[in-house]
Length: 490
Ligand SMILES: *Cc1c(COP(=O)(O)O)cnc(C)c1O
Image (cartoon, rainbow, N blue to C red; front, side, top):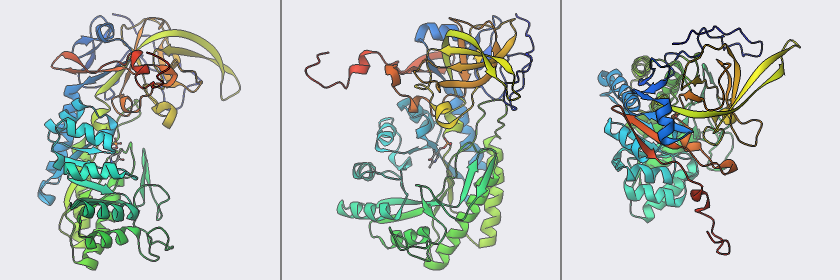
């Protein structure tokens, strides 16, 4: 065993990042349940050593703790079902496939009793091929093509979440033409927006998604001045012969840690349902409150267990139902990241390291160490896209060396190609060492690219202490698969 050296605080470190007592420690809450360190100091996943996984499958490698994924899926299912059992007869959980959709993950979600949300014809095709019951699939998207809408109608998906008046009219016509009925949820924008540790409430909606609850001032593009796009859409959906209006939907953002944002959105949407009842004499049967449940990427994030979020939300829903004299609609939610994110970690191999002098906020200089790994923005674009923070630990060994402020960067031709902006790592970490980045299950594999003609990593699932490839590593030959000029033979 090694003796950890407490890191001296760097003036370059952001305020949220304390200098750790032991940079090799696995911070609780950041890692999949099967992750640990063995006596030799190696990071393990269900007992499988990171160096062995790296040797067998190569790096970069996305490792999924399948048992952890399944446990999180079950926790959402049982937590929400229990919280809404008395009030509404339970709740349905749709796994937001877009966070990490493969045949395997769609199958895991379905086997754990979840339904699956898709956001395109491609995602729909994956869910169907995985064997998910079409009646348990939802199709989202603000601009679905005719081919996508037709595929959904043909497959008999349980719900098509309609995003605009334009789309509602188009889908109604398409379904009528095909002699089918479209099962429709209307996506509403309740004017509640999540901002990670807080939410803001606004009256108007200036975004591409959804039907606003606020009255329109113009008569353009399907709007009726003085009426909300949401109420215009409900009237149109109820009037359309080819549409079954199931209910309404809202999704207020992502990385949400508290239930109050969800609760306020639910209240606003329930008020709208009361208005629909008064106007049309119809109580809509279903209410989807979306996804966005937060996860821990670094030690500062403290998500609450699904059952707690569910209980707080059920309280808010109950109060609103009583006040509005409404029966409870069937409740559903759509968590993605909170199921797939923490189940994943990415293993990288360290290559080049260097230390530079960096300017400190107070006009001095301080050392910043750069550790470059064999992946980057092509396997995890979230730091570049969203300024997302991650952390990392040494995965093949622990170290006696002092921990120093480090920036983990990729190998792309972009100075912005950062994977972990700030983390304290042992100073002797160098070529050939392994790094593990936790919470990379969501929005990494599905957002991966071939930028700089890098090949995309394999995805390995670990279950019952055994690892298997569920997505093979891309080969350089794959890079030529779509080259079509017959004069350039392969
Ligand atoms: C992205 C998205 C989700 C899932 O969000 P997470 O942050 O992964 O939970 C759910 N519903 C809708 C409509 C979405 O767009």
